[in-house]
Amino acid sequence: MGKMRDIAVETADLLPNWRDLDPALPDLSFVIPAYNEAETIAETLCRVSRKARQLVARSEIVVVDDGSSDDTLDRVRAGQWQVPVRLLRLSRNFGKEQAIMAGLRHARGRAVVVLDADLQEPLHHVDTMLDHYRAGYEIVYAVRAHRDDEGWLKRRCTAAFYRFLNFGSEVAMPADARDFRLMDRKVVDALCALPENNRFMKGLYAWVGFRALAIPVELQPRGGGRSKFGFRRLLRLGLTGLTAFTDWPLRMWTGIGMVLATLSIFYGLFLAGRTLLLGHDVPGWSTLAVAVFFFSGVQLMSIGVLGEYLARVFNEVKGRPGYLIAEDVSLMPSPEC
Ligand code: UDP
Ligand code: MG
Image (cartoon, rainbow, N blue to C red):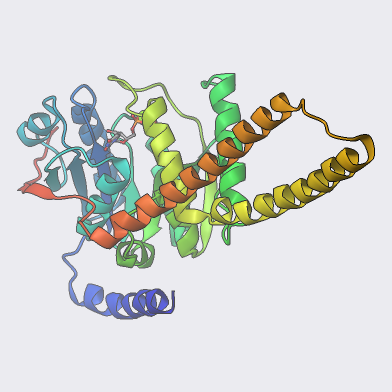
C-alpha cells in the first residue's frame, strides 16, 4: 500500500512536465473495448470520431479488439475515420476489464473517455463530461438513470451484490456506475500503476479516489449484436469484485465457528444432563445425521470461500500479464467517414 501510493504520487508529479513538453499529444483519447461488435463498430467509430473532432483540437481513438471471432477487426481496419485510430488486437478474449486496461495503457490523451462499442451510451454525454472536467473534476462517470430494462431478479441480484461488496469496504462502490467515464491523466496513470491482475474496474475507479462526479445516463438499446455479459460472465465478474475488495467472507468463518462451537458445548451439556437424569437414551439417529450434514455443509462452504481467495492469490503469484497484444496498428485519419 505504501509502495503504491509512492508510485501514484510520483507519476502524478512527473507527468504534467513531459506532457507540456510535447504539444502533439492528444487532448482527448477514447478507449473502446470491442468483442464481436462487427455489427456496430463502424457506426460507433464514425460517430465517436465526428464527436471527437467537434470537441477538441487533437484526439485519438484506441480500439481494443478483445479476441473477436467475427470481422470486428477488419471493419476497423478497412474503415475511414476522422481522427487517428489505434487498433490493438489482443491475442484472445481476455474480458472487458483487461481490454479496458490495454486501452488505458496505450491512450496518450490528457483526458481519457472509456466507452462501450455498442452505442448504448449516448455520445452527447461526453460534452457534459468535458464541461465538468474543465470545471475541475478528475473523474466524471455515468450512472444508469434507471434499470427498467432489466428483469426483477437481475435487479435484486445486482443490489444484493453491491451490498455485499460495500459491506466493510474502505471505499464506497456506487451500484449503478458504468465504465463509461472521462478520466484525467492522473487517474489513468494511477490505474495503470496498480500492480494487481485480478481487476474489477468499477472497484478500482472508486479505490483510486480523486474528485469524482456522477452524471445520470439513459441507456439506449444496443445498436446491434448481443450483450456479452450472460449469467456466467456476470458471476465470474462478481467473484472477481468480491475477492478483490472484501475480506469479510474469509473472516466471518471465525465468528460462525465460534458461535457453532459454543452452541455445541451447551447442547453437549444438555445431552449429558438429560442422560444422567433420565437414563440412557438410544434414539437420536436423525439428530446425529442432521448435525453431520449441517456441519459438513458449513465446512465445505468455508473451504470454498477460502478456495476463491486462494485462487486469486495463486493467479497473482504466477504474475502472468492480464492480456497479450498480438497486433498494434495505427490508422491515419481521413476527412470523411
Ligand atoms: N467486451 C469486451 N470483452 C468481453 C466482453 C465485452 O471487450 O469479453 C466489450 C463489448 O464489446 C462492449 C463492452 O465490453 O463494447 C460492453 O459489453 P456489453 O455491451 O456486451 O455489456 P452490457 O452493456 O450488456 O453490460
Ligand atoms: Mg452494452
